Length: 323
Image (cartoon, rainbow, N blue to C red; front, top):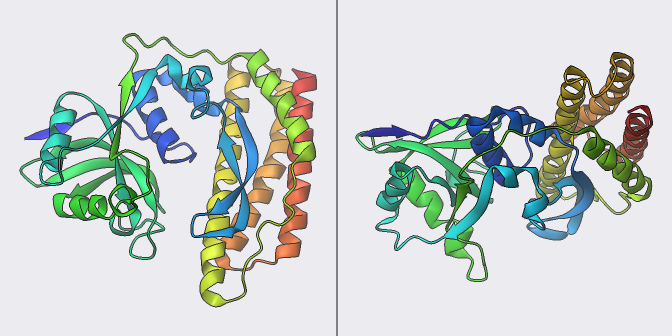
């Protein structure tokens, strides 16, 4: 038997595993929720590396989806995210198939070391993660998951034996102090209303970002250790944070386009904002390339990033004043 949930990967840009899978579900149900993904409800913050708390790097956090789900736009599509636990490892595969047959939107805790060939972590390091299931082929002994690799966010086939290994080594099973569930189920609203992008909400977030960017500091971040093994790990963590920033500016580009198409901003303002944002986006792409190639010089990158934060502040100030 073969079954597909027919969820389409939301792969316009990368946020994090939970958000991309939540938007994959919502946009598959109601395409207008693309605009909810573009909405500028984010903040910058310093993050600590999972394996080295002394290494800190800047990245982006999407507001509300964890601390106040009712205020998050997807609450209009996803009623709640339900944690769950399998009866046993022996029954896990059939439990997954039962949930998919019942139309449940299932996300399972896995270890990325043994999960998807072509991912950043594949056979290199352990990184714990939730992956969205989109179907299965029982005769072939495979499952279909929506997840990310270095090639992008898409659907992949995962053999049963690889799933068992990746789940067996997941944080849920190897860390006695882990408080998360074995899986989550995204429960949808009975009726999903279309999403409406509102100018006052975009402007309100733009004004908030102007204030936050005026005080945000990257002092003490990107302190890459020169020892080769630690250096590579630190560059990888730094790259993860910068990659999310780069992707957020892809979303900001789509936000501008959608606002212009809906007549929320004028063509003249759209052109001005697009030029400003293009400079910011190109700058972060350059920083990302330096992390990828190892051509990283901390003082240079810190100074350059500080300039990009100032340019983004000016971008949001222009949007708020012009709109």
